[in-house]
Image (cartoon, rainbow, N blue to C red; front, side):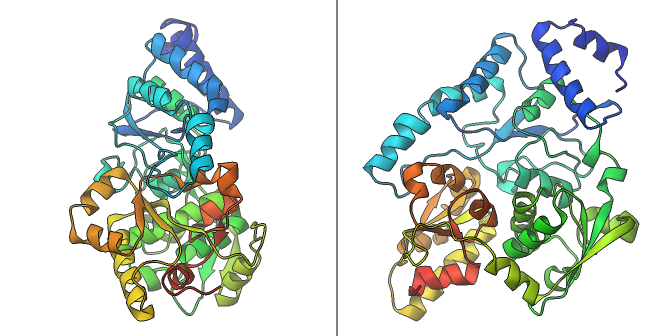
Length: 424
């Protein structure tokens, strides 16, 4: 990898031992993936994936403290993934004990470290930092040092920014150095599609299910997708962006997609069109039967597959403002049709703190609360890491949550049916 004289000097210790180690880490990372040089991070803000004070993360806490003590703090303010605990989310005494006294006992001290390193503010905890209300929405072409797979794929695909699928810790290293290695999705060649996806469904496909199918097929490759402009239009409206948020999260978690192009819709596809497709790209056709096959093959991790769900999570990744409004209306309508006053399954909608604050200023907040649905900033995945919660029959419309936990996937329509009308 080519380094400038200044970069080589830092690597050799001109700014101290700790900064030299930061640079060494980044250079080794770049060398592993064939990077040719280091390029500046150009976004205003960063996003980190590690937000939770798990006791087992002691080496991370020690590293963070070393960076703070030696003045190696982030050159950017940053947001970070959601908090793991919310007292408003249903949990019994033993579950709460494990959350607060065992699993996340160091949460408060870890958040203090994040603030010293450069956390944007006390509300900067969300996996969807790019939502308008959060203030961390990078511009097209900006180079990022983000982690969090669902945020990276959204930034690359919907916003046209440039970021590799970094791991936790690599995100803060790039932000401290102000540089990241140039390889993969930061390069023009690395953003070429090696898969052609033809969506030929008879109705608008479920975002999370379509993303799952594509992610499991292409894995870490870049897909170019035809047929979605029929359902989403040719402009990135709020509705389209919310759809792509959920779709992308499923491609990134059920596979390892860091970038997708949608014909006539996403920025690079609108500008460059089919020139983004690499020679020899493979083809994958998705119709109604294929989506049904994918869903039917999801494993059921519940101890008793016939159990009635005891909890429902919607919002992984976090819901947008418009999704909260739409879901409020849908839940109200479902309850009206069934004659019930409140949801029949304890249900939690999760969203970013700033979105939650804006939503709570509207009439919809009281209307949603009247249905019995709980609105939270929590990370459902972190909730499900609790062994006592893992044993519960939890359902979700998130393919990411399904992939990483024992939660069971249902489509949004199926979720709505179960929480408002009951049934197995």
